[in-house]
Image (cartoon, rainbow, N blue to C red; front, side, top):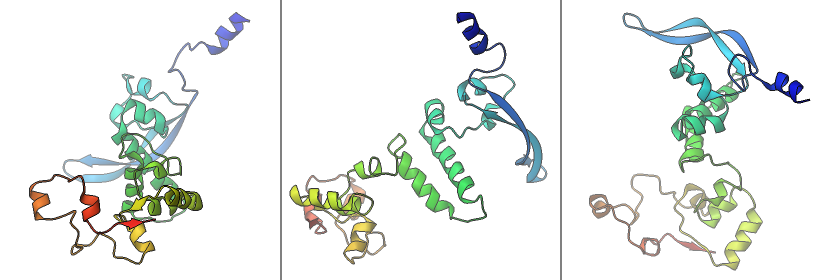
Length: 208
């Protein structure tokens, strides 16, 4: 039995965890000094299975052009900025698969939200709703009744600093140039320090 297991599991050649390799002919953008960027066709290798670190370390592989759609492995091998780019590329491929168009900035904001804390954050109640935001912002996503009940029981306050909260109350969101707020002024720009009681002095709080 042990011999059979060794024969079926031992890797004689190749890279571990790479089960199959498929050859495809695809378009790439290349840069030439006299011409600039131009579209060209070349052969590529698609793999079934992932082992990004081992593939990038292979002497015959161009590590600068090696990509993976396994986001967990990307963040472990290359870091948070690389996984943000990989996530953005995957979203653009999925959205534009049937010819649909979504502006790049919308997808970039989503990717920034998922990665700005230094790790991948799920866009669910277990991820984005665990941020330090007000109850109105949290209830606009999921678990509306539960969040509002908890906010009422524990007397939470919402300082109306986001877009969602202000839209709920018919107020102007703090995103325009002439918005008057104590949180941004000449003194604060010159000396960027935050006072402990700036929330209470801003005048834009809303208690539940």
